[in-house]
Image (cartoon, rainbow, N blue to C red; front, side, top):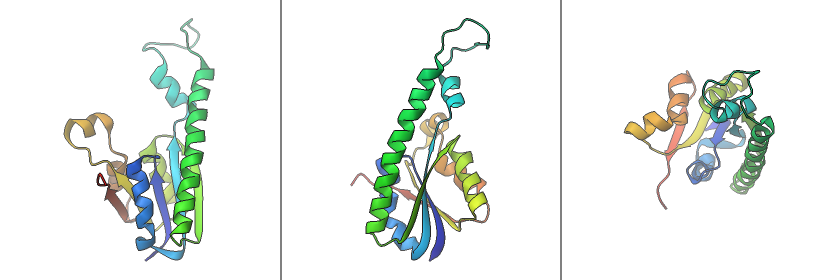
Amino acid sequence: MYRNALVATDGSGTAESVFQHVHEVVDPDGTVLVVQVIDEVSHVLARTTPAGFEFGMGAAYDPDVADAIVGAQRKAAEEHLAEAQRILEASGMRHVETAILSGIPGDTIVREVTERGNDVVLMGTHGRSGLRRTVLGSVADYVLRHLDGVPVVLLHATEE
């Protein structure tokens, strides 16, 4: 059994399905860190600002809108993480921590695992393939391919 796990969630049912399996992989006296990655304001602005926008131009954008989007993501993440902690503690895990991180999910998760020295990563996967995976990306695939020397346990949730 592992003693220092990082569990990545995005608040989806697929991600949450991992919580019921953590006790099978992590020692009950081990530490479980549940993380959720949210956007940075700059990332929201990059997605919502018209192409070709140059600072100083009169293009209409409202940084308050970006702040509100990030604030809403943070509030939702706090709720998801509180529920994750409740589920994991109810399953017998004694040391559960949570953290909201900001950035690009795959990069951020890999960096966090490397910095913290986790010995296992658990996360759900939507099981996308083909064009959907190319267009939407796969955080699980990114973590699996960029995290050296740390086991990554992926759970593809069923429809149950």
